[in-house]
Amino acid sequence: MQRLPSRLRRALAFLCFATAATSCAANGALPIVKLFTTGGTIQSKGAHRGKLSEYNEGRVTPQELIDDLPELKTVAQLEVVEIANIGSGGMNADLLLKLAKGLNAELAKPGVAGAIVTHGTGTLEETAYFLNLTVKSAKPVVVVGAMRPFTAISRDGPFNLYNAVRVAATPEAAGKGVMVLLNDTIHAARFVTKNSTYRIETFVARELGPLGFADSDRIAFYRTPLGRHTAASEFDVSKLEMLPAVDVVYGYQEASAAPIEALVAAGAKGIVLVDSSPSFAKAIALAQSKGVVVVQSDRKGSGRVLLSERSAGRGIISADNLNGQKARILLRLALTKTTEAKELQRIFNEY
Ligand code: ASP
Image 1: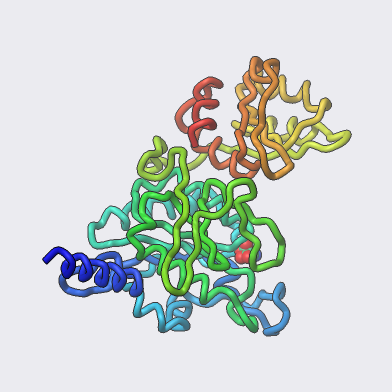
Image 2 (image 1 turned 30 degrees about the vertical axis):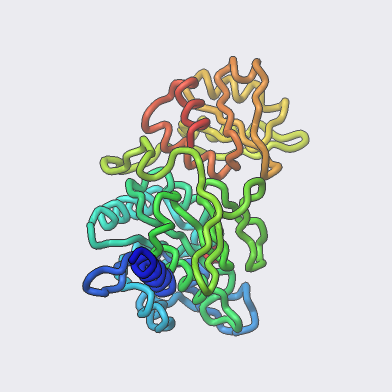
């Protein structure tokens, strides 16, 4: 008596995974996955199928992306929300807020299983981390891009998109925060970074590795990220119309302090230092005296920033192991809540 039902249950579970359906709903309908599109190489067209970095011939529409991939019809019911159709260098606070608010509205609907976001790879990690901090849902959100344009020989976009939809439709993907998928590899938005200008295996989480893989038999997860994100995040964008100005300054031998002085004069509310320089000391003190928050990141690309007692005592905030561009995202959101150093450091420790 016991054996048959459990076998049946296993068979049913396998069927759910194989079809990537959210649940074996009584009506057998495929899960609804929202496709938010912003543009990027995944939507870009080039004149020459072999020139992978030449893609200035416009972009395909979201519908063309879907029509190109009939296999999606067996995975999920896709519903499009077009946010933009731009290169990711053009992403800004307006679009980030529009995207986060749109995702929150759609994911709150009981019938929606998850969402994916198409994005240029250049600043993809920034948007993914922003969403990790502002999406108020445990449902899966997967940010996807491509290293090769829509028109290239052996393009990577269609498989990335197909796999992203499979992950977004997978119940096991819930609660893992916003994820990034390219090259069959699932990364946590908090830890992922673009590591190569050109290679399809560009996205890595340097110290901590991927969460799992989108393989053809199943979505194989091995880990889940710790730290606060999505449904457990304290950041609420619902009433925000803008984000505070935060900029990034690079440290190197004989670095000029002029960028710091110029940013303070231009009204920056926060500055993230990617490494530092003794020549910054006076400009940093002046910036802080004007209420500008200074966060210390590092240019090595991995490892935590351990501040000296002197720096911490002066109110500098450690970015933990966030790179400069991600520390900027967190500081923008943190400054919507506080400018107090101890509280800001708590936020950087928790997210
Ligand atoms: N120029 C592109 C962008 O970031 C690069 C890419 O998508 O890979 O939008």
